[in-house]
Image (cartoon, rainbow, N blue to C red; front, side, top):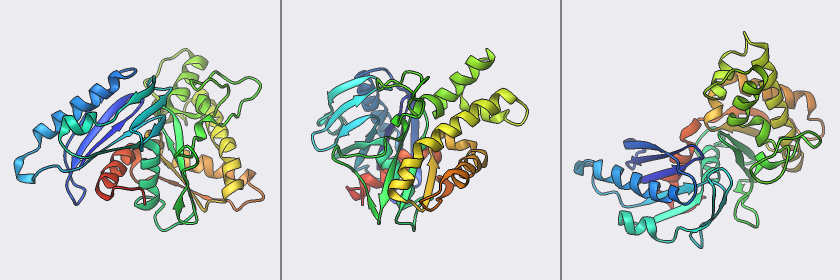
Length: 298
């Protein structure tokens, strides 16, 4: 299977066999706008050309995209982080790679993979939050993935939590969870507070114990994330909240902080258990490969 995950910063691709073993992989920077689709085609073609013939032919593929996606019409509707609108994907990847290619929303696929096969397996009511360049996720209720009228649900990053003094969000609103709690937002907030540039949120988490400024920035991010999820918890009563994506690399520090907020502030609904995703930043690729194989999110 060929799986390609288009993120706000990088495009990642993998070819896996039927057992899930990775045969080939690659990463390229994500260009802005519709040029990202050319980069996807080039990356997939390069990976396919490098796979040894002894592994047999690659027969299916899936590409997962950020923003709003219409898989039925083959349309990338909108992505604020990458900067495209109404790009017709159609059969461009099928024609380039010579095989059936499915497209889907990146976080819908990543969250489905964590729920069905990863940290949420065995539970019917699960909220998966994918933390990275942006914040989004999935919601499973009574053993079914909630998709919503637009084909996806879980835009947790665009729940407003800073109503009076919020920063502008790429979505056009102000004070969204994503403006405070995403990896990019944490790095920006630390730089604004200290004047010191950091390569990403991981660097901020790494100095939590020694740097009061890092602690203040992360505490604010965790507060925003927890506040944004309170409504989801009270509306759907998940038994488990899975924190996945690249920022989940912070590990127990992040999980324990979110769990503490829930334990202290959730009152009417049951307090969900917060766990770390199993697949981390690879959730989209793992899910895309499974999706290509099964043909549906089931």
